[in-house]
Image (cartoon, rainbow over all chains, first blue to last red; front, side):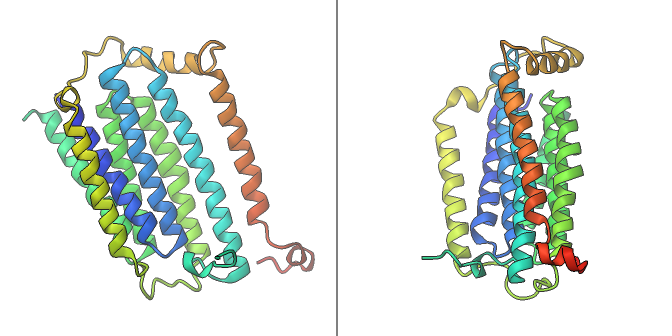
Length: 102
Length: 180
């Protein structure tokens, strides 16, 4: 069978790739894609721990479903914000939206 | 190596490679399509983990809704950022360094948990139908997870209303019928 560590290492790799996207990309939509990658890595961890450590307690899957709901809300609001910013400033590059930069 | 392990390795390789394409692809639409490949690979992993319901939700919610929403937004905001110019900011090397350090730290932490390193899953005690039934009942059970479930419903409603309000064109555009 597959050892638990394989899932955890894969999730860590996906999380770090997503974080590289969040920190390194200029386009706000690409930053949101990085966040989706990070949320998926967390979901893999949650489901793997549920299956390997406590398959009789369904809470692990419930946690994942809550993360799905949060990810959907975050994507909807985030993309609406990006469209709104694009209307006002004609840009989706994160560093050009510097109205509140100190 | 068993066939299941082979399937896992192929899926994991697809997930990691397509994730790297998501964060490095110079064309945003291509990045969004690679994101769909990553999400599908994660759905396969959920099936390998006996969480078939979550795999279905992953396909319906992530691929069917979120990825399509991202592609729509890429197309709606395309006039300026026509995939020209640098896609990375000038500190991208620092971002890559932080990512590599975090990955190394996570694997080092994992190496200190020898019981997790080789842990194998306990044999499935319940059939797939029973797991899904238990999951559904636990979400509406007063003694279990009904409060998080209702909070998630309110959160989704708030996000729905909020994104409609945010993405609405300004009021003067609506009056003159100019639209966008």
